[in-house]
Figure 1 (cartoon, rainbow, N blue to C red):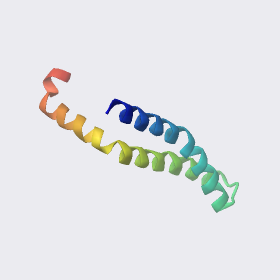
Figure 2 (cartoon, rainbow, N blue to C red):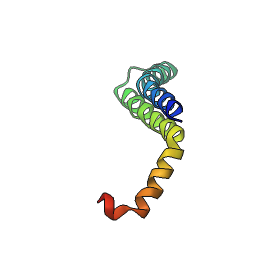
Figure 3 (tube, rainbow, N blue to C red):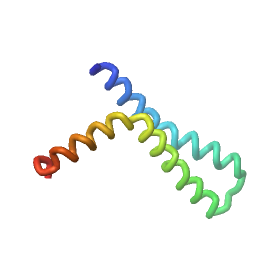
Length: 77
């Protein structure tokens, strides 16, 4: 269990670092523009998609921790 959690953690870290770089390159090449607004839009889309992917990967952990927080919120606050 601990090794699986470590592997998922390292996988998430790699996705967090590499995916925005790849998405920036792919989206910038797709639009093929050096316009200021297009580049800013690309810089907004890449982290958003990365966040969606990471939430999808860590959803079971987030759900468990949220349930724990809802039952023990006084202890945590």
